[in-house]
Length: 507
Image 1 (cartoon, one colour):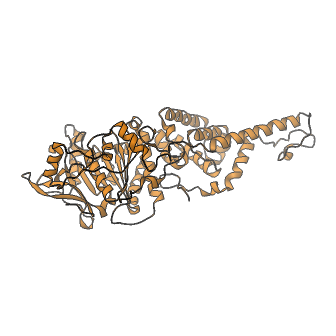
Image 2 (image 1 turned 30 degrees about the vertical axis):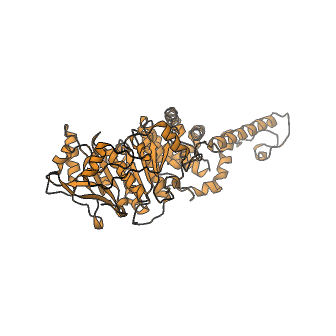
Image 3 (image 1 turned 180 degrees about the vertical axis):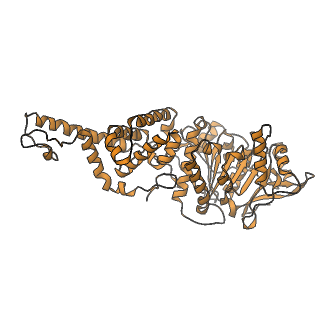
């Protein structure tokens, strides 16, 4: 049975269906990542819940998405239902103790949990382009936009900041093209239209401040258990691209912020990525390559990433090769693609002479899975046909009243509820434009001959006759020069972007 060095997952069965042995995940290999796959209704959510409970009890914080609302039950005490007690007996879970877990509910829309926000600057051009499904030319313009913001000290916090910068870029298109490459007004306009669509889909709720602090999803309780951060994702799944981009951003933030720690006795955080196919679906090769790189390197930061999806073919081979701990629920094999998925899943396991893996995958019952965890020295164990243990927490969703109570008593209650709109690119560009317009108006008044007041900083614009010289700055040029003076500021110097293009905080 599991101890403080492992998580009890279930019991493997002999060919005659009798008890064989306990199947466990060794905590010291929890950061070697994992995969939970299977068709709808085969028990993936329960497997995720069992693993999340085990990591929490071992003092490891967990972050996971709740796609259907079922996972929210982890916050409440389990109940001794007949089929659960029967399963506990089958896997020799004695005693079968019920437990509630320390849960923090999050929601990008702030309805079923604490609001989660990130700034545009933190997101970076690569992930923003992915979120907006931009063309290659438009992605180039987006990269230029972030370059200008970084160099000119313009804080991009929310969507209106990015919209203001794009409008400014359209006005400056000729000057910017000479410096950065082709910046066309049609490309800028296309990005602006996409931003409007994004805003109408609710993405404006996500971009802004206060931004999520990584430390708040890595909490432990006074009794030493890891907090389970549950992201309410039922409404978020209406915009699957936003869901996938957010989790990618979060994974990149973990990678950038956490120090190298090597292999530990237990992970510092475990990250469950449900509906993982959304991450890789139609993703450009450059993004997939960088995700593979993050998955490969984040292990040394003490973070385990567990992908949850229906089909193992949803995960690119390079990423699949990094996933050491595997739970395979039943797959259906009616179509050629489904048959290929079964073969792929079977071939990734270390074979067991007692049964044919490909055949077993199609015959697994609900709550039963093929399990292969890493053994001593990190070697994959021989695949075993396993009954998954029943969870200790509630099986199924909590009520709205229970959710509100948990949110009110949360350790982060009140910290993210109120959005903050401080001075950023939108306000800065408005101010620059207003100053330039006022300077223009004063210059025109002086040139009309009705006044000989001098304007500080504009003496070189006027000739001795009081007329405008041919090299007078336009309004746009005045604004540009005013903004460019901020390049030498601490903001301009501190910009460092990480492996996925997100902003590295505090560097």
